[in-house]
Length: 362
Picture 1: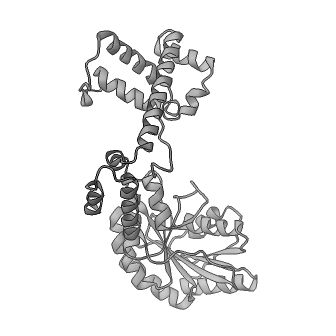
Picture 2: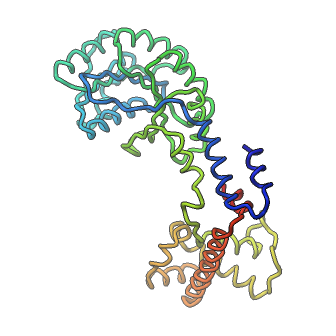
């Protein structure tokens, strides 16, 4: 990928759209690495499909299982849940609670999970349920022993789909689990949870894709009721945020960081990009103190600044112990810098050759 990008950079300066060409190279290469080879299609409506959920201890399998049932109920299915976990004493209660009284749950005191699953499946087939979801034991901490036990259980159940729930916090260690899962279950899909606000998520997703396992993405627990079948290209496009599709914004946070650096308030980044007068440095520090009294939303979202009321402006002035006119002057300075920034961005976009801009953005 680096070599291909360098070839584009080395083209004559008059060559047009260098940045866009580099973006397409990065996009294509990452998509090829992340494409699992086949999509994780959701179950279509048919006569009593059986889905078997498996997972290691602590990954949130039971909650994900119940959420999967509720999700398909909203899509027009008639789902039902079977608790085939005979190891945990409160497994049935946990599944019933997670179902939120929206989906019927079957459980009994039968000691054999295969018998229990068979009883539940037979009952719900008789009730004309078109999606029967079986929750299994999560007593294992090693995936090898889990897969061996669940493979034997699946032979008695003959499920249409086996779903392995995996927490993305394991990062690239997901590769070995995904590969072993694929070898054990030919009709298998992996649900990757905990995908937002987790630095290991991309590593886990790429590892599952490298093992050529179809996957579904969702959040942990009840943070989100949605499931998304993973597709490599839309996922990578969201990661890259194509600068030609999405306009850049100049936020107060950018101005805040700039003033902190130039005034020497940020000691880790104490260097000047130019020489400033004493009055300029005092103004930078004053503006920084004012912005310290603002919310994260105001610093990061330009619309919040545009919609700021007089009452809010007075609150910021009081909190930062300055005159309200100084807060107003700081906002005027921000408005002027925003215009300069947008003019510069438009100039860069309109130039025919822009390799440095494209590489930095990507």
